[in-house]
Image (cartoon, rainbow, N blue to C red; front, side, top):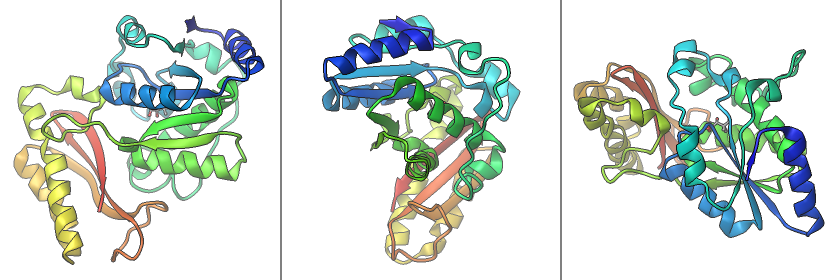
Amino acid sequence: MILRRVVDLRRTVAAWRREGATVGVVPTMGALHEGHLSLVAAARAQCDRVIVTIFVNPAQFNNPEDLAKYPRDEARDIALLDGVAVFLPEVDEVYPPGFSSTVHVKGLSDRLEGAHRPGHFDGMATVVTKLFGMTQADVAFFGEKDWQQLQIVRRMVADLNLPIRIVGCPTSREADGLAMSSRNRRLNASARDAAQTIHRAMTQAATAVRAGDMAAVDRIPETLKAAGFRSVDYAELADAETLAPVQDLSRPARILVAATVDGVRLIDNIAV
Ligand code: PAF
């Protein structure tokens, strides 16, 4: 079932609710890969009805070129989504004339990705709040690949008493460790080869940190640059929940990395 209008989505969800069904939502920007499909599988396992939203949200792109180049493949996406409802709104349906509201999660939105992509998390939090309101789902599924996004969504749901449960799902990886991402499609052969270094460097650093070598994370940028990355926005050891920088492992910690190879900006993270 393909739905493009909020009224039709709400009518569909209302009918499901009358049957007593539980509703899960998987928010996406399309160009689906196995990582998305693992979220859909988790949603289908936990909920009676599933909605996959596909919306390339202009409000979360701080760079117009990145928005223009973002891969779009609606026909293929729909073909991959058998047995679930697909919500595919146009930009005007989500942001009608006069739209004036923003959801801003202080602090958490300002570090790491937020520091390098001004406005990105406000755009994300605003559209996710809207998608929760539009779908009225009971449960929402997000990938751990976007770890900071997941923490911001959890904070926002708690702060605003949004009646939805958030489920984080493990990152799907290629055989060489590269985290699956729609942006991987833009990597040429040599950049694709270099890209696997992110996961290798993070894994090595995590082992070193566990052995007490906290500075190992600071060496990730030189490893990435030696492998062909042009720039590294950050490679940090952070508290898994607050994302504040950490110096010890008294609480769960995460290594988070953002780096660019051949003009494609990749992000990844792992638990320490
Ligand atoms: O992770 C994404 O693809 C997007 O940030 C999301 C959650 C669909 C909001 O546009």
